[in-house]
Image (cartoon, rainbow, N blue to C red; front, side, top):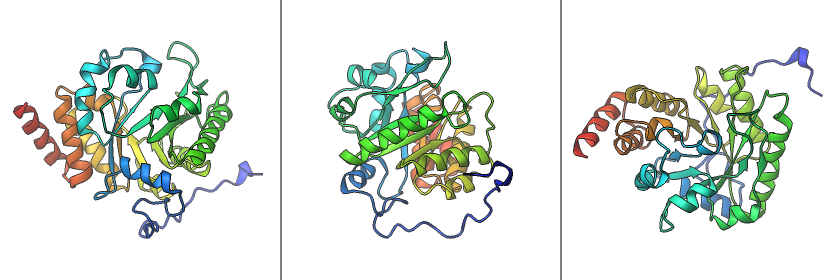
Length: 292
């Protein structure tokens, strides 16, 4: 068992030694099944090795929050600019056209809302996830939450079992409770736990020292956008994460709550895929906004 009195922070992350990608262009995927690799190649751009995911799963916790009042009007028009759509089965079925060809990362756990105790989640059926033609399945883990840590990690492990059976990657989403430290040590722990339990993608938050979080997680890491920021600051967040080795972003509010959502997702793509600086991305945002 781990000795809580002798847990030492990692200090040898091999930051100058990239992961082996000789058999597949994404780290950690060399030994994965054909199905998982094929679906990962739908999500992650094969030239840049990165992804711009558009998250709109907030409603299963928060209801019709700002920017998500009408998925058919606010999110569906952005779909063509995203590399992957992350949402819940109900909103995808009712509000995303079936002729959409973008890969779906399906939110596969469900539970409590912001009105009660959070994180008491359970998984939807594997048959329903498969029927949605999901390219990935996502579940949250609440590392550090005494009441729900074990059950949410068990959910992730069960989802990985399903994913390995059917060749579907799983994204572990690190939850942040009000009492959890928002630092590289916590995010590094939570991200590693997701990978240790078999996640093919990890979604977490950017913080100082993020290069260690990425290096200690042997699969692609994407960052959550978090709360709405001014457009330039959101692009700086994307840029800094990419510079630290992130494999992309899974943004929601910083896109659909932007003053110009379509221009914003295009600007994020400039930073993530084309190496634009934050200022270059912001200039592109203003250009795209003016063109609209």
